[in-house]
Amino acid sequence: MAWVDDRNAASLVDLYELTMAQAYWREGMDRPAVFDLLVRRLPPTRNYLVACGLEDALVALERFAFDGPALDYLASRREFSQEFVDWLARLRFTGEVRAVAEGTPVFGNEPLLEVEAPMPEAQLVETLLMNTLHLQTLLASKAARVVEAAAGRPVIDFGIRRAHGADAALKSARAFHVAGVGGTSDTLAGYTYGVPVAGTMAHAYVQAHADEAGAFRAFAALYPDPVLLVDTYDTLAAVARIVELARDEGLRPRAIRLDSGDLGDLAVRARRLLDDGGLHDTAIFASGGLDEEAVAALVAAGAPIDVFCVGTAMIVSADAPALDLAYKLVEYDGRGRTKLSPGKPIWPGRKQVFRFLDGGRAVRDVIGRADEAPGGRPLLAPVMCGGRRLATPALDEARALARREIDRLPARVRALAPADPPYPALPSEALEADRLSLIESRRR
Image (cartoon, rainbow, N blue to C red; front, side, top):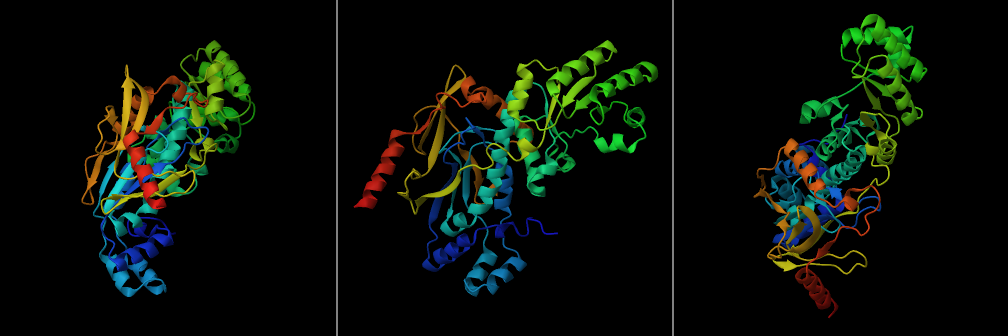
C-alpha cells in the first residue's frame, strides 16, 4: 500500500515546481524569495477561517528531502539533467517561516504564513505547504461553525469513514480538536495526537443478537457505563425497554443515541420516558446527517439533546469543500513582486497582519508592511529559522487559543449567517501604495 510519509513527501509537488526549480538552478536564481500563503476570499458560507495545520507543515519542511527512489524516477524523465537530480539529492529546506498561530481566526488576503528561502527551495515546497494547510484550515473552519451552533453542548466527530482518504481522516480529527470539537471516533487520532476518543455502538451489534434487550444487557455487562443505540427497530420502544431493564435489572446507561427520524421530537419523547423511569442522568446523543444548520435548529427548538455526533458534513466540509488558497511570490532579491491578473491582487513584500481590539472585541484587521507599526496586535511571528522549527504552541494550547480568539470576534462574525457587514480586513495605505507603484512600473 502506498502512503505519503517522510521518505517521499518532498515528491508531493506539481511537476511545474520541479521544472521551474531546474530553470532557477541553471540561471543561478538562488537569491532570497518571499512567498505568501493565503486565502484570497472566503467562501460565501464562511465569515472567518481558523488557521490550522502549521505544526504538520513545519515538520514537513524540517524533514524535506528527496529519497533514492524519487531521485531515480526524476533521473529517468527527459526533463531533468543528472546534474540537477544530484543537486536535488543534497537539497534541504534552509529558509525562514513566519506564521499566524494555529487556532487564530483569519480573513481573506491575510497570509497564514510567509516563506523566505532561496528561490528554488521556496518554490519546491509550494504544493506540500498548500496541501497541508488547506485541509486542516478548511476543516477547522467548518468544525468551528458546528461548535458555535451547538451552543456549549459537546460535539463528537463521527466522520472518519467518510473522509477523503486515510491521511485526511487523521488530520481532520486534529483540526476538529483545535476548533473545539470534544472528541473523535478516530482511534488513530487518539494515540497519534492525544485527542479524546469516544464511541457508542452500531446497529450491527443489536441486529446480531436474538433480541434488542439481550443486546443491551450483554453490552452493559461488558461496559458498565454504556451508550446504547436505540433506533435499530423502534426508537421509543427501545427506550421503554431500557427503562424496564433499569427497573428490573439495575441497568444504568450513560446515554442513549438517536440516529434517525425526527431527532427533535424523538429527543423530547425519549427524555420524558427516561425521566419517568428515573433515568434522569442518562444523556441523549444525536447523530445522523447533522451539520451546523441542523444542530442550530435543534438547539433553537429546545431539543433535550446533550451531545451532537457529526460526521460526513463536517469531515468533507460539504457546503464549502475548498478554499481559494494561493501561494504567491511577493518579493525576490529584496524587491517587491506583484502581478496584474484581474481579480487576483498581490500586495508585494514581507507583511504583518495587525488585529485591532476595542473593549476586548476584535473590530478590524490591517494587512500591512512588515516594517509598519500602525497599532494593533501583530499576528505573524517567526516559527522556523534556518530550516529548523522554533517553539510553537502544543495542540491543547492551540485549542485554547482558538476558543479565546473566536470568542473575541463580533457576534455577527461568529454567527452562521453571512456577516453584515463582513469583518474588515484591508491593506494599509502604505502596502496599497507599494502595489500601485509596482503596477505602474510594469506598465511603463
